[in-house]
Image (cartoon, rainbow over all chains, first blue to last red; front, side):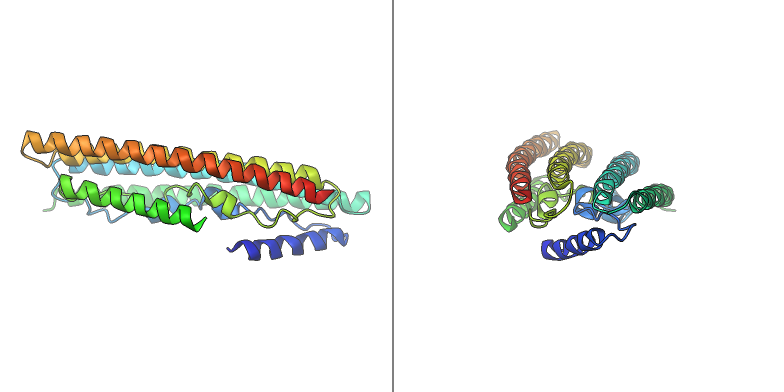
Length: 146
Length: 144
């Protein structure tokens, strides 16, 4: 997303928060550009047939899957940090609201959004783990074609 | 920013090309997207006037600037790890060379290129961290 568009989106969120509408979430400018997505690493993986014919084919396949898991875990950790940061920033925006009730419901919604985001990250991580297992199976099979 | 991206792409491209030339078609398993680019976090920042009018404007600004530095450092760390991992892959692929002299030259080139990659990441990281700080300072000033 372009910087100008982010500015517009964030400005919009701030206007809404300022107008005492509880429940507007903080929109982190780093959303995808700070951490990448959970499936970014899998999507960056090349074909599982790439090591066909190599002397150390099996070793290369296994190393690749292991490294892909490592990078994916790094992304997951980063996204969880980002979610926590968004929650913290969202609570600061809630301070713009006029009454304690509005501030409280705003905070509750921010917490609910954070919990939902964490669940999504967890689900995506499980999906990517399965995809990486499949990638390894094909890579190993292609090292030893029938 | 585009200059950095172009420089990064050129160095990465020449790195890949050079290793292929000597090692005989290196095949690195990861394409672009494994790590966030070092200049992406700062590049994601909107105008420093973002939080004007907010009750906690200064705090919001400082948090974003700190995060900018944090994500930049994380990206640099990821790219350094990738350089090391790519070096491991290349060394294994060098085993495809039947001639020991060719294999040794292949490994030496891979090591040199990984070192060059780390130097580039270090330079870019320093530059981007400075930009994150400038943004944070400007944001706080805008609050006043």
